[in-house]
Length: 138
Image (spheres, rainbow, N blue to C red):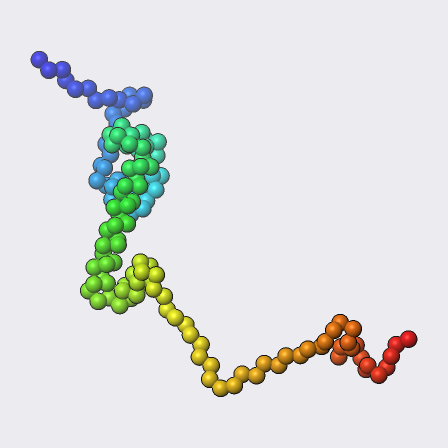
């Protein structure tokens, strides 16, 4: 006769809160933090982290990073698809982000530009702010 499987209880003698990992994955793909995900699931963050280590076999930070990377990839894929459909704004944005393209802002000046240069000579020469050079101070 098989033994009936026992539900492991926590220290307060309560059964563990079920965690829907598909929901967790969606929140992580949307770049929610572990604290935010725990809040949305109405559990303590430590509970989420411990259960991740136990049920997924890796630390929560590693698990979250893999899901975030998937979310980032999905966004890029959608942006790329929109650009290929002819969305000019998306084409320009992706060109700048991925290909290093930029808008050139050139200033073309036509005509003559006069630049006045004043040379006051050496430091011993009189300066306009020194007053009348014919009036020598003794």
